[in-house]
Length: 289
Image (cartoon, rainbow, N blue to C red; front, top):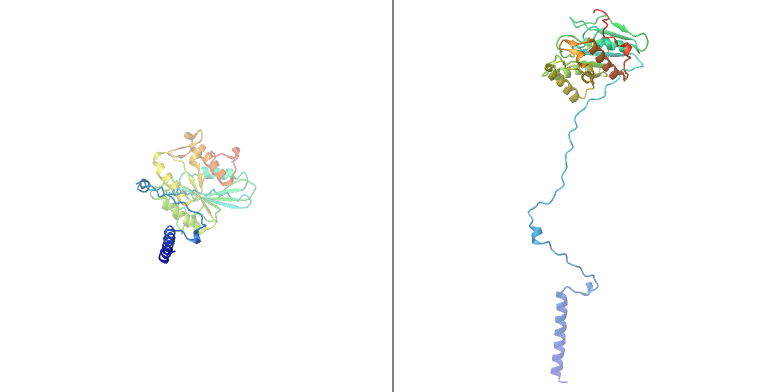
C-alpha cells in the first residue's frame, strides 16, 4: 500500500474516534456513570397552574373563647367545732325575727346557736344574744345588718362590725344599694374584713328583687361577685322557683314565708343539709332588741 494512502486512513480513523468521544461527552456519558440508573425528568407545571390568581390555602388558628370567671363553691361552716358567722346586710336581714334569726333557729337543730344583732342606732355595739338549740358545738352569729343605706365597711370599723374572728362573712346587700357605687363598696368591705381576719371566707347572698327599680343594683352585685370570684348563695333563684313566689316579698320587705325560704336556702348552702321543716318558725318574734 502506498504510504500516503495508509497515513490518510490512519488519520481519518483518529478523527472519527475523536468525534465519537466528543459526542458522548456532550451527551453526559462518561465511564463513571455508564452503569447509573437513568432518571426520568419531572415535567414542569403548566403555565395555567403557575399563573392562577387564587391564593394558596393557609392554616388558621381559632383563638380560644375567653373563659368567663365563675364564683367558687360556697364554703361550709365547720360542723365539728365552734364556729362564727357574720352577716353584713340591709333591711332584708336586719329585722329581729327575720331570716337571720330563722337561720339561727334552723342551725340550732344541730348545735347551740347564739344570734346577736348590732344596735340599730349607734351601730357600735351588739344586743344580748338570742339562743337556739341545746347541744352541739357553739355557733355565734353576728348580725351587722341595718336599715340604713349600705355603706362600705372600712378598715377602722371592721372589728366593730365583726368583733370575733369569723369563719364565714355573708354580704347580703343590693335591693336598696346604688348600682354605680355598690361594686366599689363591696370591694372595700371585703378588703377590710380580710385585713382584719385573713382566714375569713366572704360570701355574697344574691338577693331577690321585689321591684324593677331594685334590679340594676342587684345585677351590679352579681357582676361584682363573678368578676371577683366570690362565692354566692342564690336566694333570688330560690324565690323565683317557689310556687308561692308572690307571697314571699313585697316592696316593703320580706314576708314571714319569705324569711323562712331565705333562711332555708342559706342553711343548705352553709351546711350541705336541708333544714328540718319543724325547726322553721319565722313567724316567731324572739324578743325586742
